[in-house]
Length: 279
Image (cartoon, rainbow, N blue to C red; front, top):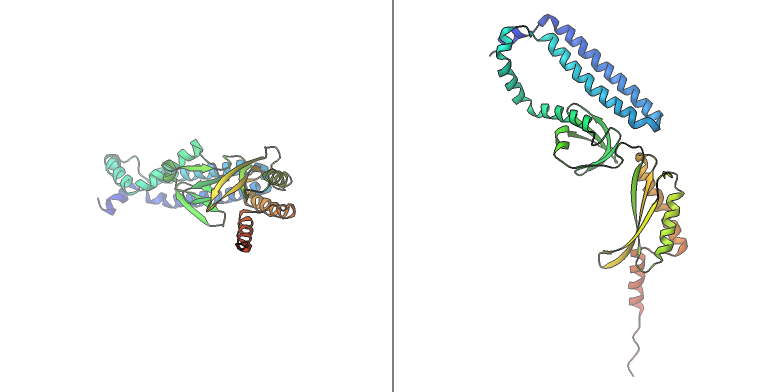
């Protein structure tokens, strides 16, 4: 079938109308999503809900636009078109199979909701905030502000982990390492106090500190592992930095040494040992 034959199945006179509908739809989507995004940043307690509404609205408006454009321009009443519809469908499906699979996967992501816009997720080597769930791909912004575009279909076959699963708050785990011989109970209390007095902690959730001994390199160390929630997942790194900074200052005052300082002191003591002369 040559291009001239394909023109018989298209209402050329309706193309300007279809183009106008497409332009109006795209502009409306951008204005609407921009307005909702501004509202989401202003009313942080409703941010995830507004971003979810924005993602759903954008997805289905684009889908409706595609249907309207196709139905208004194609001569669906043509018997010849119906006769060749099967072969055209197979050809188009084969040519755009990856695109179609991503669109279907996008619908599944919006219905099944393994994650939502605004969630902090880990996918492969990438970790960051979901900014958009589109017809073809998901856009993720990493913590160093790099945008990663991932085809929707990959999320159906790969493992994805969500840190906050649709909630505004999220758990943050901060490991603090000290020498094995140090006072772990005092260290545990310092870490807990630092978490409870942090400006980023979500006080309605429990603050837990766990102690364990682990083998690191050539020596054992004690790990005080803090598990606490931030009131907004966006502040997880600020919370971790705040905890480490204040805990290190408190350890310095209390004389609690980290593994490196304790190991260095041990090596210095070994180097200064003297052997009594034999009688």
